[in-house]
Length: 126
View: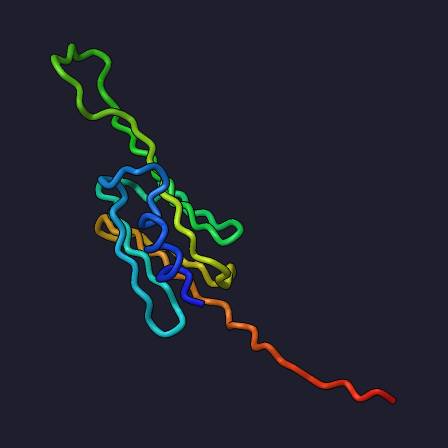
């Protein structure tokens, strides 16, 4: 079953709180793997967390801007922020989930579990 295609796009594009301007994500499928490419510009990989639980993939980022307390700022627009986005990915192979971050793009790969084939067998009564 194609969870990302059927569930993700049908259910409000997977946004968990209606915001459309953060953690922009491209999702595609190739062979038996889903790929998520998530924009995380300026975020160190130590400040990114990826979790999988019960069919949901959650990406959390924390952006910290350290300011010199000795300066008297006229205006501060760079502040600490935390962002999180959750995607329903369905039943994937948990052991094969991988994530890497390069040039401001977090790439998460998820291998699909092989679909269980339903088998039907007639039992002979002895």
